[in-house]
Length: 171
Image 1: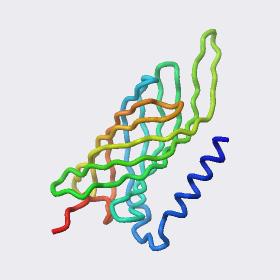
Image 2 (image 1 turned 90 degrees about the horizontal axis):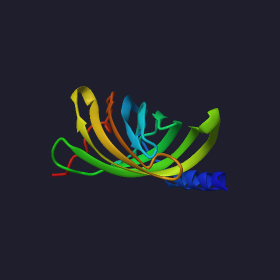
Image 3 (image 1 turned 30 degrees about the vertical axis):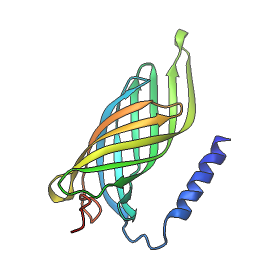
Image 4 (image 1 turned 180 degrees about the horizontal axis):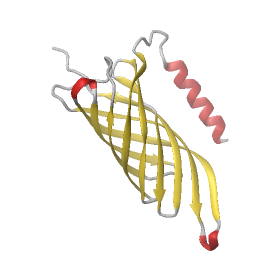
């Protein structure tokens, strides 16, 4: 049942991407680290910037490995971030995405339980541009499903391109 929902959502996303998405393509890569709650974990991973498929809507998938609280979670998240048009160097963003996660839980008496989970995430954050098209970010993720309830992440995006800098207010 979960797989059918995932396929439906991915098909709808693919149909929503306009054929003229000229800003799509590899723009950068960077590390991400943070803490999660329920389960309480330390998380680390990488993210990729694949540009905008409509103005200010960026495709930025990531993968993470989290450990702690008798759980190990390896996840891939496919989010989109809407970058708000602002004046100044701080760019707020919000979005969401789907997460596919392998969850391994240590049980009493040396047993363990593992499963694959599909969950939704809500995402909000701020990004500061650095030199040469690089950026630093702080992000809050809220999970809806059998993954972490909340994650606070920080990271860097290395690489340039027209969609890696801040969204600018139009004069």
